[in-house]
Amino acid sequence: MEKVTGKRNDTAIFVYDGHVYHIDKRCNGIYRCASRRSLHCYAALVRNQDETYTLKTSHNHPSNETMLQEIELKQEMLQICRETIMKPKDIFDMVCRRNPVAAKKISYRAMRSFLYREQIRHRPETPQTIAELEVALMNYQPIERIYKGKYYPIMAIEQCYSQLIPY
Ligand SMILES: [Zn+2]
Image 1 (tube, rainbow, N blue to C red):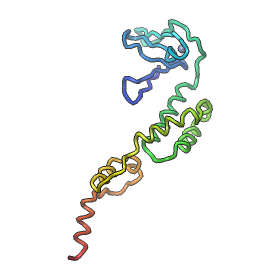
Image 2: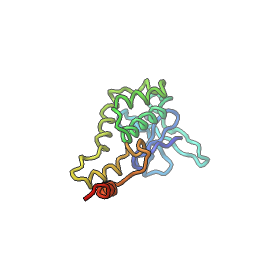
Image 3: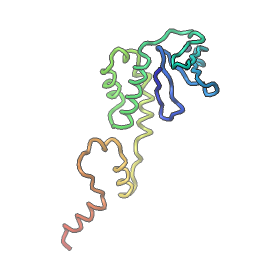
Image 4: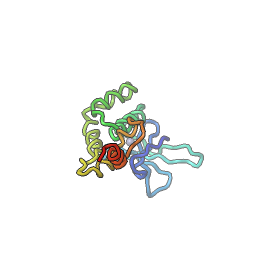
């Protein structure tokens, strides 16, 4: 059983034997197939006391052996989207190259809108004042990792200049 945590902990999904499950919040130790609504699959997995799992009702669809890897690839794409200014197509191609087998099952068409949405959500707003620009630069993740030098706040740079320029 592998737990894949979403952005919030309550959105975690569980992957077991090539199937995706959601935890049943009402019944402790019961996991229900994530395709319950889309495929009307009522498969349920029960956690035993010795931490093994028993499938109580069978799935009405085949398992996917690369399911976990596909989810990991998608999560990686979204993370790069949040942290860099790379184009979604370049991110998709780069991540897919690392695991061509699992990547075969992910289409760019399906991922494109998720990636664009994630990028727009994390793009900083255009600063209107110098102070806002300073805050934006301090908090802008894409340059956080690229710029390794010492960070000079704009106020300090202004002070340096005022000392250099003779009155
Ligand atoms: Zn199922």
